[in-house]
Image (cartoon, rainbow, N blue to C red; front, side, top):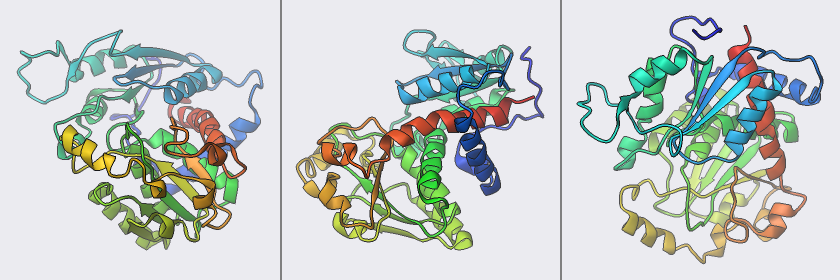
Length: 347
């Protein structure tokens, strides 16, 4: 059996609401300490621990940074990809398995839990529509059936690992969260991604007292339940949340511009309509981040979760300029994930 011992059921990280605000601040403090001790020998809090990384979709930063984090702490990561290393898994409860999937998550989770001390999952995006996709049924099923901690490496609805790095970058830059003005700005892209990083960041930023503006063209609104939960959290923290279709107005007074392209949730299940809606903004300069747009804010800093399409989503000048925090943000993936794995797996 796995060498780690956990209470039953184990504690999972599916979304950042699984951590209290106090625990978030503790993780940021630990991240900073681990970053300062980078490369020191003899610090192996995960010695003898094994983490399974299961990818049902492609990954670059998440896979490399999490594998490096586990390795740097003395643990052993095992990478598995559904496209080459295993097969499609069924997650429906009570399913009659006469289709493509030869195995149920219930069985896979139980078996893998016997081999590793934690399981990190990047599930496939589900369909046929956003109402179903937002349930995050696959990662929820892993968490329900695993007997070790399960970590969400980006589902349709949440990307807690990216948000941890985003928040550490904001704290590094400003020293605190309360009262800071964050604009999350939709950008054009021929292949828009999920809203998961933005959902995680909006929710956490509101819990931590930031004033958030979300700017997107009509038809690209974020999940209304996520926004309602964030607004409710803002009542306790003193934060505010504003939505607008006016790109330039959203940048007025912004201290941070977080650029991200995400799919229209209304057309999640209709590729033809989605392409038509996206094409309306293909050459709209209001939805591309440039130095001129950033200059409308208050010494505005630029963030982007990456990958980023240069000169489509964001101009070279903005990405490579002094306002950009994009590389710091990416580097912080390693440090926050080291802190997280230390907290989850330290004996």
